[in-house]
Length: 386
Image 1 (cartoon, rainbow, N blue to C red):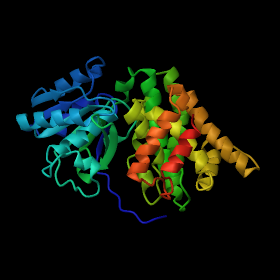
Image 2 (cartoon, rainbow, N blue to C red; image 1 turned 30 degrees about the horizontal axis):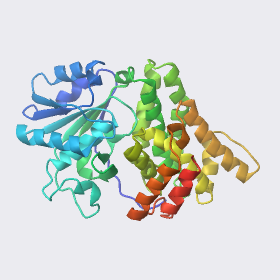
Image 3 (cartoon, rainbow, N blue to C red; image 1 turned 45 degrees about the horizontal axis):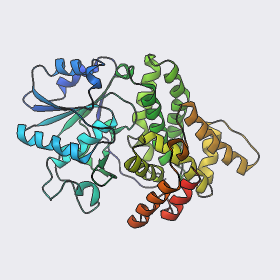
């Protein structure tokens, strides 16, 4: 196991009716800005719960955060913060709203030029200050409610970039599985697949004898595989939704990443498909991951074999056969969640592949746990997914 330093300061409030508990977490004299997305929280009752909880506060609201939140929209929220002298932010929504809020609380305190530098000028920019914020999670997917990372899209340039800072951990996060009952099926599927690939990025690399991390990762994957399809068939089942919500949080709250190598090439390639073509984030992951596994099957051999045996209960006397069966099992799981896995399913082909290749070649990025996935390898991965 590799050396590591780890802390996660986020307080979790889990269960039914826990939104009412936020008054114990936010100082009563603070001005609060509630940030949310397209307004679904007004249809599912969450907005009314928030409004009732904040009845004794001076609070304002900012809506309109997009899926794959836009830098331009975030900067509008920053202006509201400055105009209203906001002290505290409450993010109410899924990963996009929470990611946007992380950038907003940092950008509101940024004094070193254009806040886009937080994303585009890493590691030269250090975040020295951020406003405090809490979250109320309405969609299980990104684990942004319990980590310090975020991904933001700049609409003007079609770039989707990430950043992280210990200053953008939420102070608290409310996880009430019952508020996810009204999600449409595609969002259930997207959330499960996003969580699944989060685990894979930290697990499917090479062995370092991190046995506890491996067992924890495999447990999370099994929960997603067992209860993901069940949630599509029985969306009002509280226990199923609770399992998925907690598994999603653990998929990327830092614990299974301790002391082990990480990949993240699937995410970084997938971000380009979202930035250029607007494909849902999880759908891009379902396209890209099988290609990464195929191209990197020698580098990832031991962990692919372990994935097949421990997670999918596969057996074979042939190493090659077990590797191929494991890759097929991953893609079959995506299909069980009603998510398509080919570029052609989204009417994309050689032109899209070339466009992503050109951008990656210009950036000169080297991806993967071995830093051996360059633009040429990215092109091969995408060609495997046509």
